[in-house]
Each structure stands twice: as C-alpha cells, then as structure tokens.
Length: 262
Image (cartoon, rainbow, N blue to C red):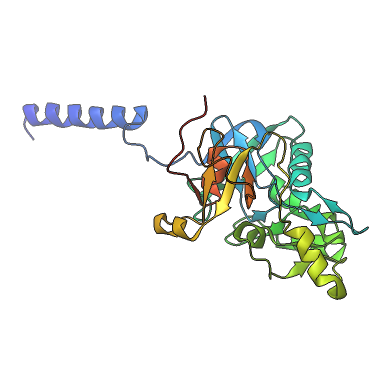
C-alpha cells in the first residue's frame, strides 16, 4: 500500500470511529435501558422523563374502568391500580429495560421496570398484588405471579371485573372474572361494569367515543378535546383520557373538527 493510500485509509477509519462514538451511526430506536425518577401514568405505564413505557406482560384496569368489590359495591379499580403502582415505586429511582414495541398501544415500547433496591420487577409485583392481569406478548416472568394472585383472590380478583382488553373495546359480553361474580346477577353486574355514563377520573377530561368510521385510519375510536366543537355534543363517552398520548395509545384518533385548547 502506498503512503498516500495509507493516510487516506487512516483518515476514513478515524472519521467512521468518530461518527460512531458521537451517535451519528446509532440506531434511531429508543435506548435499551433508562434509569431515573418515575411517575405512574396508569396501572400499565410508567414515565421516565419524556419517555413512557408500558409494563411488559401487564394489563391493568384502565383509569376510567369500574370493578365490583367483594361486598358488591362498585369501585374505581383503574385508579386504585395506578395508585398501587405509585406505592410500589415509592419515589425511588426506577430502571426500565426496553423489550420492544407495543403494537397494540401506539408508539410506546414495552419494558421490564425495577425500582431501586427491589429484586422483583414492578411488572411482577403489581400482578402479584392482583391489580393487573398477565398479557401476551411478554418477556417478563409474570405468569407465576398471575396464578398466585388468582388463586389467593388478591386485589381485583376478590371481586368481579372484566378484562381490561374487553373494557377498552366495549365488549359487554366478555367473560366475568373474579370470585364475587354471581351467574344469577349477570345482567346487573354487566350494567355496573359497563355503565351508560362513565365517571370522569380526576384531571382526565378528554372524551373518547368508539366509532366504526375510525377504523378507516386503523383506530377504534375518536377523542374530543375541550376545544372541539363536538365536545359538548359527546354526552356519553365510552372512555375518558388524561392526555392525547393516552388516547392515541388506546387506539383513538383526534376528531377532525378539533383545535388545540387555549
């Protein structure tokens, strides 16, 4: 090799090394792991900085979902699931290991998240407490925890509820789960679990309505902000959301007549 070619090759190698080191050649995907202060967005999701992860293998009741307890009273199990996740985090630093995209929930990625000082992941602990179901796809080892929660009637299992997936899709004839479900009260139970008017969770004022026409864009429904002309007319929403990101992650698109709220 001539001296000139040697110099050219050396410079090319140095440039490639610099670009790789500085991140220009890095993948455009999310980092494989993220550590920091965490906020429980709902029973399924944690937010670290501006990144929201869905807990891998976890399907918790939605914030606007209602369950029935072992005394036959309705209760906001979705809010309780979020609060239980917040208690598990307990203001500690959380590490989330990215395990891939969540195809059913918008652009979010699934992660196995563990609070500082814990051996078990938040995924496993929340399911073991009985405030979430195990759901495929999963890489987290949560099935034993799910079996234990069901066997011991922990959390929502001590009452009666429908799978969060059935609630999200409005499947009113879905299976009733839990130890307090009475076959002779099937109609009355479903009326409670799928009320005509959902109670709006605190600070969650975005209205969602299931709509066949939304399927044209690959969605299951349409959401309406306070600034939308259609907002007042949407008197019986099928869902309530706390943010546009949450609505989009649940498969809803923004109403075409919407403008951003002032």
